[in-house]
Image 1 (cartoon, rainbow, N blue to C red):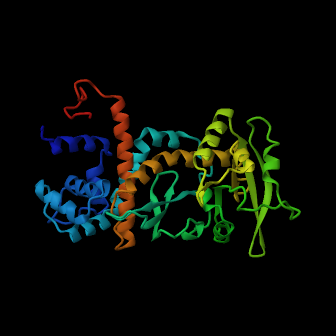
Image 2: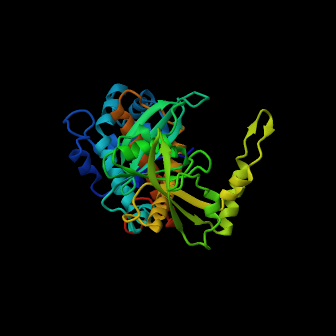
Image 3: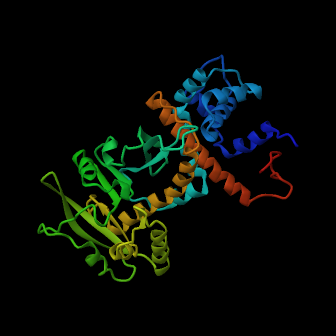
Amino acid sequence: METIDLDREWAVIERLLPGDWRELARDCLAIRRARGVTDPAVLLRLLLMHVGTGMSLRSTVARAAQQQLAEMSAVGLMKRLRTSEPWLSTLTCKLFAGTRFGNRVASARMPAANRRLRVVDATTVQEPGSTETDWRVHYSVGLKDLACDHLQVTQSSGGETFKRFPIRRGDLLLGDRGYCHREGVAHVIKHGGDVIVRLNLTSFPLLTGENRAFDILGHLRGLEGLKPQSWQVQFEWKQKKYAARLCAIRKTQEAAGKAKEQLHKREKVKHGKKQRLLPETLESAEYIYVLTTAPEEELSTNEILELYRLRWQIELVFKRLKTLLRVAELPKHTDASSRAWLQGKFLVALLIERLSEAAELFSPWGHDLHSPQPLA
């Protein structure tokens, strides 16, 4: 069997990183001692070995010693991971801006430029050897740079809610249906923020200005062609009314058909019987409708839907990230190490994106004519 030259393969990864990635290791204080691991390349290889492959800290340092890469303890690697969070975050931001996906988002017209735009999400994590979900990771990521600004780890029973995130005045949080709860939305408003959230048809009752029940489907049916529309609504939580806006657009026939097909695939089986989908649920799949508390004079209906579209595009990276998360050990010792671990996951996901781009330009001779290093 042919032996893999790991140093040569690592050179491929180095070519995908920002040009100043080594200098950034020192600027961000990931490398700040004259002893131990002093080479940024060695440190990054150790971190990616642990974060990207799901190897435990102990297995990672054992593998590193076997490869004569570095000699360090598992505790030492944990400390290095913790102090490398700013470096990993900076690399992620720069790599995100340089990927085709990142360029697609960065080049799009970004509404609410003066807002801190945050995408919130959650995913489950299994401990090595476990057959069940052990933990749920709740995180917030900047829409403009894909930098993680908050992370919380809970037991698997910890549900998704906006209440898990600290809110600064002016924040605009984007969430999927899992975050469509009146308590969570009220929490964001109370602390000076706003939301754009995919609306649940039945679990988030809306009211008209006259305090009557707002017929969501009735209004959606009135959409003209593929033209977006919005309606002023309100909702109540703990005897207090909150103003909001429902923004919606009709899907194309093809997109609606695919959405309905997915719903049929997800039909639940309860007590041995298949639960039939409600006609209202199927009909609602013909539309995209989101709830926002941002004022119309600041963000138009088109801009609200555009922001939600950008959030959906970032799901492409999240899906790849979530796949990686399921196979990794979660360092739960401190918040800092957990955030660094998650930031490393983002970096791995973006490196995979860049590798996919490079594969499209693959040369039959295996390297770039302008560089002695292999492309793949």
